[in-house]
Image (cartoon, rainbow, N blue to C red; front, side, top):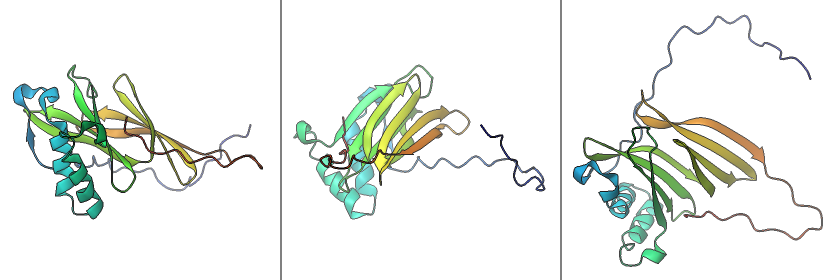
Length: 188
């Protein structure tokens, strides 16, 4: 095993503190939550309103499909789960929405001052979502790569951040083996 080689040793260390990024997930229609209980929020209406507010045609198509979820729940391209992501002992809302462009958007929300606030968003070719403690792990594929991303709550920014990402190449099919279909995104 080789030893690490130090690079750029002639550069002075950075003295400027890192800048905390602004809350990039706060956009979207405001939703008031009765009694501050996230399970009382109409998550279908929340998702439909967010996609309807977007300007691209795929989002508008997704909003149209979501608007029919109350009438036809089995055909709904979205699923909701509840878990404590922020460590405050209260449930937060986790949504997975299969979008018109073939991706799955994973979005997470918490309640602050009786208002729903998005704290995480990722658009992926979804294979699996796992929850371990307060951390959310997303397994996805794209362009022959397999990625595993762990999201965790960061109290000082009041949003989730990518704590860890691992990417590896998917194994090549064996010569002469039948071609396998690429995994399809799932919403459940």
